[in-house]
Every structure is written in C-alpha cells, then in structure tokens.
Image (cartoon, rainbow, N blue to C red; front, side, top):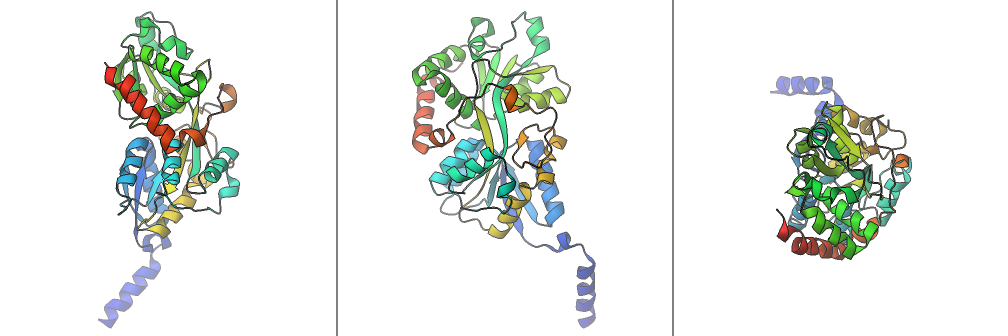
Length: 339
C-alpha cells in the first residue's frame, strides 16, 4: 500500500498544475453558443476546473437566478445585456466583487461596476442595429433600410424578425432605446406599426439575423456585431446602424450570491477580464468591443465612433420597476397583437 501511495504521489507531482486543480464551476453563458464553448474549453484547460455550462438568453438567466435565490444552482453569469445584470444587482441576487484587473478596463465597463455597487462588470460592448439579407432585398425590390422609420414602412410587411424582450436582452435594449429616442408613447406607436411587419418574435436575440442569413427573413433586428458575424461566415448580410441613433449594450458578468463554488467563480471572473482571453473572442467570430483596454479589437467590430449612439440610461432602464412596466406594456399592446 505504501508503494502504491508513493507512486500516486510521484505521478501527481509530474502532472501540470492545471490538471491537479480541484473543483467545478457552474456557469450560465448568455452569449452565442460558439463563444460559450470557446470560453468553457479554454478555462478548463487553463485552470483544470471542470465547468458545467448552460447557455441561456439574458432574460431567461435573470429569471432562473431569481427563482433559485434561496438555493442557488449557478456560480457565475457571463455575458448578456447589462440591464438584467443591473436588475439582479439591485435585488441583491449577485455578489459584490472587485477584480484586481478593474483598472485595466474601459470607462464604460468601470461605470457598470460602480453603478451596480461592484455586483457586475462590463466584459464587452456592442451597438444595436440590424442586419439584412442583401440578396433577398434585391430579389424583392425593397429599399435598403437605413433608419428605424424605414422598418415600419408597409413594404416590409412580414419581412422582419426580432426577439421577444421578455426573454431577450437584445430586444429589451431595442425597446428601451426606442423609448429614449422617441419618448414612451411615440415609441409604442412605432412598435405597433413595426409589429405589422414582424413575422416572428424569437426567444434568442441573435436568432433573427441568423434567419436572415439563411434566407428565412429579410431583416433581423439585432446587435450589429451579430450581423457582422453572419457576414464573416460568408452570408450576404449587411449590418446597419440606424440613422436616428441607437442604444448599445454593455455585456456584463456577475457572481451569484450564495455561489457554491465561490473561489472558482472569482478565478473565472478575473480570468475573463484578462486581455489575452478577451482577444480570443474573434476566434469564435464574435466582434464586440472588449472591455479590457489592452485586448485586441477585431477589425470587423463596429466602432462606436462611426455610430450615432444615444446616451443610454443603463441605471434607469436596469431598474426592476422600469423594466417591469415596459415589459408589461409591450405584452399588452404589442405581444398580444403579434402575428
């Protein structure tokens, strides 16, 4: 027995440090599945920690974390729009944590952390817009849509997809952006006109432009980087920044309060903020703007300086009361009348 134990000790000493690491991590990833898999595999390789990863949309993740507050099943929530992360922070569902890498981050990422009492942090940013299938547009003799107003034109009847803002952070960002651009009542008047042109409200925020890429619809309202991803994959998709102005997301990361694997969650948190890790996103054809100033910015990434951005009020539209009221009105006036 002593010989066996001694042999086991020698073998363990010869293994790489990462392979000797113990424990696991329960991760919810609210980004595209290709990015989620890349992060999962790389973190397991770098740390030796086993990752149990689930891919959910932002709205679904918030609902799950809220439902499990008394007995959390998740350790860390990576990605997805910042509004539900801020809402979770306000409701005390996430944990305060200041990463030692905080000083390396862009100002917008630091503000996200400050506004949440350091219960969330920005990991990437991306502007809202849409992508259209240029081949379909030409076949149907439609005018290229450059403004929000264009999408409400009757010529686009049945030609548009967007996500449901109850499940999708992308669609909630669109809803909140339009309210800030037009005022709430005018925004809902616009959404009622747009509704006549929407063939489907999807669960996932990126699904509409994937459908456009496949030729199943002409226009998908999405974050612009999701449209760029389709272009990078060889589809005839053109990304558009609306002429009237648009909102943007700060994709965020939060540690769940009561995390069972807290130390590993903090390890992942710090690891995900490293510039070399954020520079990997382009390998999964993900073209957001990374939050670490030292990370490599993909050349295809839509630049904020080229887009008419609104001064998006993340604090107000991340508040539970504001979000609840807007979603209830959307359900009542738009969702109930969906095609």
